[in-house]
Length: 88
Image (cartoon, rainbow, N blue to C red; front, side, top):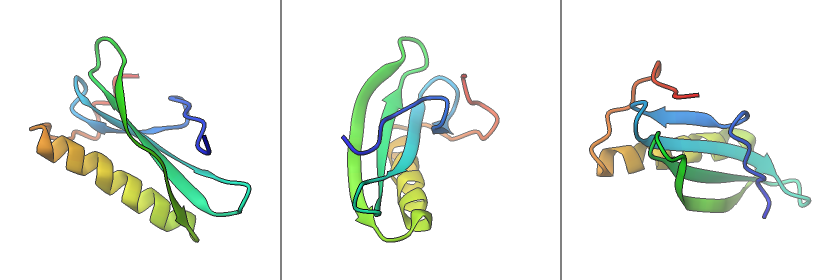
């Protein structure tokens, strides 16, 4: 595992009840990777849909692609992201 997921460091995309958290980390190879975790808002974690995706040379691209993956999950599952709905 490259990205050690920590909810306090992750970014939320969702409607407050269902959504995804994503987090970017760097490996020992100095490249960047991301992990996306689905949350149902009630019981906590549902599943990791992407783990240690990468490598990317720049953190910028890892963040953009992680956000895109989280938004795609929301779209595919009928969730309309609300930036003010972080359930933490």
